Length: 138
Image (cartoon, rainbow, N blue to C red; front, side, top):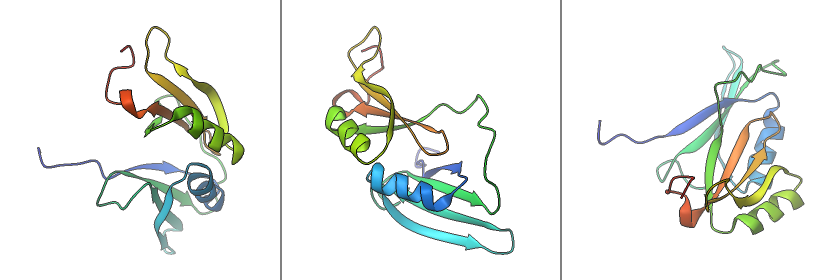
């Protein structure tokens, strides 16, 4: 399957409007499209930094009437490369975002990372673009 590519990652959210606001206003993504399924009572919203034809996006799934989920212990995080991790964290903080790990090098390495928590508790790792494709210990 050498011609495959990642299209999106789906996460379930408890308040679709709040999540759309976070991913657009705080994280700087665009709302690309929404789909509502009245028969099965769910709404999907796709957010990303560009059109789905250009790269992977996030699918926010809201199951009507569900206000919380058991986060479990298997999911780790969504990683996003940024050009200036320090300025990005300042902008996220100014927009009301929750920085849970301040930007700086990983333990035992030089790759600069930070973590942000979304309104449902999903972790988003920010990685300085210049080292985004290197191993974290690099």
